[in-house]
Length: 284
Image 1 (cartoon, rainbow, N blue to C red):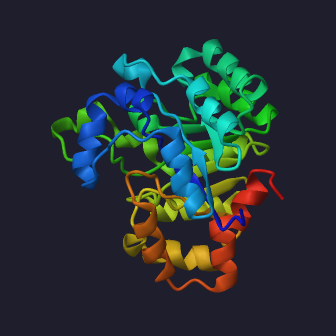
Image 2: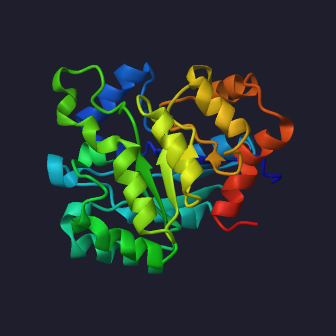
C-alpha cells in the first residue's frame, strides 16, 4: 500500500470502547450529530486501508473522577498486532494513580509495544498537567521516548449538557499547563490535540517557542479552523502540525474534502498529511 496519510488521532468504536464510554458516547453523538455505532477492528482497518491511510489509535480514561473502568490498553495493542499495516496504538494512564500510572507507562512500552500515551484529557481527568505530583509519569514517558498526546481547548465531551457532565475546561489550557511540561521535560514530545479554542493563540505560541510541542488538527471540521491556525500551519509551524480527524467525531471523507479547500501549498500539505507524522513516529 502506498501510504498517503497518517490520521494521528482516532478513537476506536469497538464494543469494548463503547461500553467503557457509557453515557458519554450518546452525549457526544448528539453533540457532533454522528451516530457512535459499533465498528470492529476489521471494519476500521478496511476503512483506512481503502483510503491508503494509517490510523493512530487513542485510548481514553477518566476512571479516577468518574469511577468508570477504562478500556484496557491491551485491547488497542491487539489491534496493532493484528493490523500492523494500518494501526499504531497509544496507551492511556490515569495520572492520579501515581506509581500505578508509572508502571502502566512501562508496560505499554515494554510489553505492548506502544509508541505513545494518549489521549490524556485533563478536563475529564480533572488535573493540571504541570502539577509536580504528576511529574513522575511524564518523566517515565520522556525516558522511554514516548509521545504524549493531551487534549486541549473546549471538550466535545460534556458539551451541550447542564454542567458539562462535570468536566472542567480550566485544565485544558495550553498556557501554563502544557507550556510548563514542555519546558520541564524538553526531551519529551508533546502533541496538543485539536484547535485549542478559545486558546488557539496560546497553542501556537507554545509550538513556536518549544520544538518538542506539536499540534494536531483533529476534532474540528477544517472549514472552521481559525485563520491564524491555517496561517501558522502554512508557514512557521509547517513541520510540527499533524493531520488528525478525531474519528468518528469527524468523518474522514468530510475532513479530506474540506482540508483540500484550505490554501495550503502541495509541499506543506504533504508534510501535514504524512511526512511530519512519519518523522515523529520514527517511520522514515
